[in-house]
Amino acid sequence: MSNPPTRLRRLRHTAAALAGITLAACGLAACDGPARAAAHPAATTSPTTAASTSPTATSAQPSLHVITNDGHKLAFYVTPGHLPAIVLDAGGGLDASYWKKVAPGIAQQTGSEVITYDRSGEGRSSDVPGPWKAQNAASDLAAGLTQLGVTKNVVLVSHSLAGEIATYFVNEHPHWISGSVLVDASLPEFYTDSETAKLVAANQQQIAALKKQPQTRATRQLLAEADNYGPVHNAYHKLSWPQSVPAIAIVSSQTPFTTSPADAQLWKQAQQEFVSAAPNRRLVVAQNSSHDIPIDRPDVVINAIEDMVRQVGS
Image (cartoon, rainbow, N blue to C red; front, side):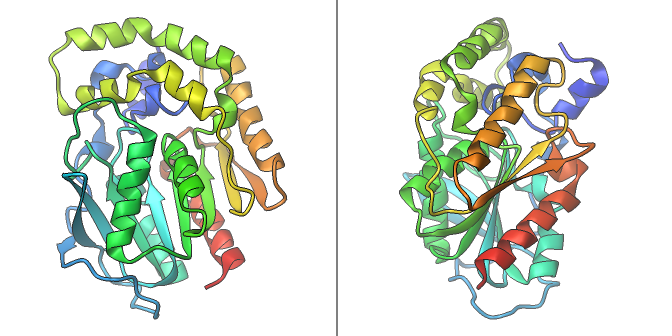
């Protein structure tokens, strides 16, 4: 178990079972941190509108758009601007408010439309019973962007667990995505058979303990995300990122595995293997940062997004 300061730090995200972080790194019983408290409380509600392709005042506040997919509601927050649209997808257990240090700055500096959202079971979005699947999350994101009229020239920014959603999404909609920034993302290369088996074994006791505790929204979501973890990640390991979609992968200097050098090394190797697979990818190291790069080093994330926006153009 992590020491208290590290454990408190982990409360910012509950990607423990999902993004290559062992459950032991997060004290699951308390994985309901400040980042989950409220997503964009100042957002204004407005009807869904198509993406703007003309410059908009950078002082605009995000507006709330509630869309429906497969019978459940999802909250999207849109800061108007021009294309490319920048879509920010937070890690496991986190809602749109996780991007509070990134979204306003990137909207102001690029003038792009900026979209954040609460995945099912997070923030203002509906809970969905049953096991959590990255494919379903990718479907939710596609439905939201479709209803917002944002189905081309998108820069997708994905943190931690959202890397899994991004991988499924770009395989299904490669022509929607002009480029991507993967922020200490959970990538297929990490999930070798031996590593996945190791994670499953390491997490069994805490999952069993969690099932015995009084259930909250957070614990139900964690259990849904941990359900069938081994087979899900064995299948995920076989996926690859489309060669046509450029990407910048940001890896934290600490990695998610602060107490396991072997796992930390494998995490770094997976990031390097990913970027080495195509000439239109590159690796950035976020020095002096935990896995929470958008919190610790928002400047690194913003710079990478700006670089990708310049690369893909308008």
